[in-house]
Structures are given as structure tokens and as C-alpha cells.
Length: 228
Image 1 (cartoon, rainbow, N blue to C red):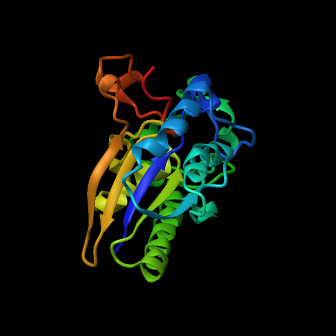
Image 2: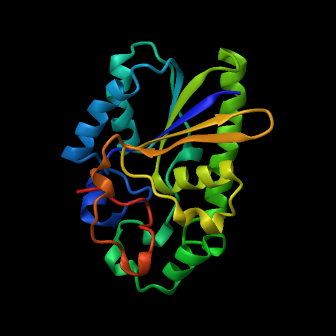
């Protein structure tokens, strides 16, 4: 079965402003995110990519654009199922304003029970994304062979949920996973089990230096802005 390269979009204006973007239109890459996207073709230069699948949201489409420009003819597809979690009424709000909402404690500690008002549940988010990956695995293997490599550009919570699925982790543990903007995660699928072979690789160890963390070790909903 294929190897899946998961790329989180580059840093966005919402990331730097501390806003939970969700499906809010018009959220673009910021200057740092544009630099990250421009570096992506070089980071992936040795990979024989057979397909690119992207979330329909602007920040993901902007992230893969330099890669597509560098590889004319590389097939690209859009799939709503790998779009960001629908945060409903939380979309477009500052994370600092949301931290005291009672639901935030559930999102942090028991995400499988979290459903966003006017939006979707985190269980539904993971289910649609995992179903999309399984369908793309089958399609890519059919069209390009079992050793094919393809890329999927998505969002922090989506990628974390797919990693949890690949590792057989309950969704309630997915907040222990971190994927920074424009990080690369790789999952090699086989007939019997997936293998996580890269997780949140940015090629930059500066992000491991001590820095201010969310209170009580909370995960940043939506994935955060990454290292300064």
C-alpha cells in the first residue's frame, strides 16, 4: 500500500493572531508561512510523488502551490473530507477567549466527547478524514502501484487525528501529538498495519527550545503557530 506524506499548511494569519480559523474564508499564509511553502519543493525533492490531495481551504492551497509549480503535471485534487474541523460558533474567535469555555476542558481531556456548537464533533472529524485516507490509499495503489508515495495537505487537528488512527490510539489521546506549521508526517500503510515513519518533521530543531506553553500543558486547538 502507499506511503502518505501529510503536510500541515504553512503558518497562517490566523495562527499568528491566535484565532481559531476553522472554515472561515480568506485565511491566508502569513510571511513566514509563505517562506515555509516556498521551501517545501526542496524538502520533498527526492520523493517521487504520484498525487497531491489538498484541503479546499486557502491556506492549504497556498502551501502546495510552490510544489505544484515545481512539478508541472503532478495531479492535484481537492477533498473536503480533509478540510479543517468545523468549529461552528467557535470559528473566528480568539483562542484566549475560548480557554475558559467549559467545552475547552472536554476538548483537552476527552475530545471524543467534544462537539462544537453549530459545528461538528471531533469524532466525526476523525472519521471523515480516516475514510478519505483509506479511499485515497486504494485509489493511489490502483493507479500507481503499491510502492507509490502521495501527499495530503491538511490541518493540525486533522493530521493529529490521522496519526492517532494509524497508531491505534484512542482519540482521547490525540492531544498528546504535536504537528507544527508546514511540518511533514509520513505514514507507510501495509496490508496489516500502518507504520508512522515521520512525525511533525520541520527540519528545524529551534522549535524544541524552551518557550511559553499553554496553561496546564493544554494542546493548542487547531495546531498553533509553531516556533517563533
